Length: 80
View 1: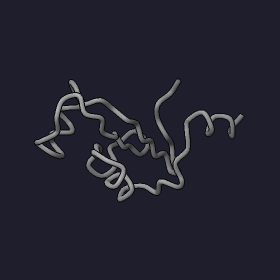
View 2 (view 1 turned 45 degrees about the vertical axis):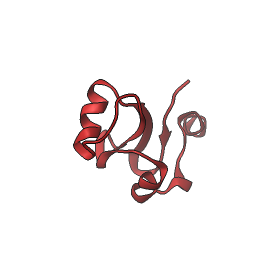
View 3 (view 1 turned 180 degrees about the vertical axis):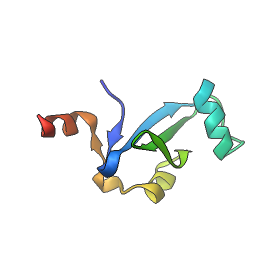
View 4 (view 1 turned 90 degrees about the vertical axis):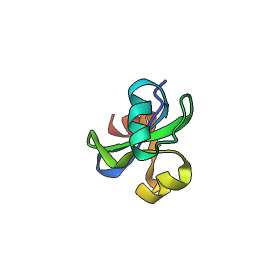
């Protein structure tokens, strides 16, 4: 099962648990980011979109249109 959403123009939103590299990048956005918390990694065509990591849905909604996000499985079935 894939755990990410995709949107228009190559947008990808993936929930990540903050550990290792994810924690390091999240702390660049917010030094108080805590290990083990779930954040969202947001990319567009493979590059960070905005800060690249956001802590909640409200911050995510500031970067992307939530209504346009769909599961990667839905998108795959549309192209087949």
